[in-house]
Image (cartoon, rainbow, N blue to C red):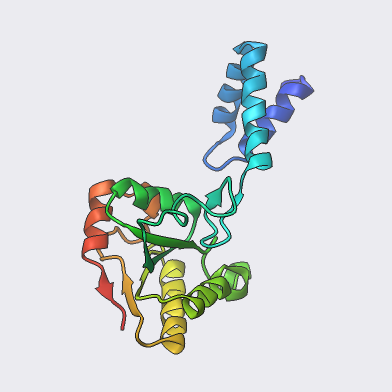
Length: 202
């Protein structure tokens, strides 16, 4: 966008760097901010900076947290012998909404994608290996998205777990999830079914 006003153009371009925000949406957001009171704009800016200043990743599962251990990993009522492996922190939120899973998580931060030069070493897979080695784990639930890359990552993790400890149960979310979908956007009832009907990968 070229509005002849550099301040506006700069903010529009900044909004367009956010996922799912196109030029028109960026313009609407920008002009909405123009109409906001200065105090409201300052509060928004402060909240955005606070995310960068106050958030870290959990030292155990790598989910987003404000402490060294997230609220899930520090909850003694969770089943620490079951780990659900997901691609991104947003997937944790989606599964938690279902209120059925009571184990722990492990966030990979992506999937294996040779085309994008992303291999196992670029993900939190070695950290998952250490968790399995250092803890008494009974089941690994692989909840990567049902995409080609998600399936390839699931297969890699399956082989890795089997090589480490054949006594660990390995399961995959049920096929009720639409092919190519993102767990983040799947409705709660479908997730509940996928968790309850998960299948063994052994």
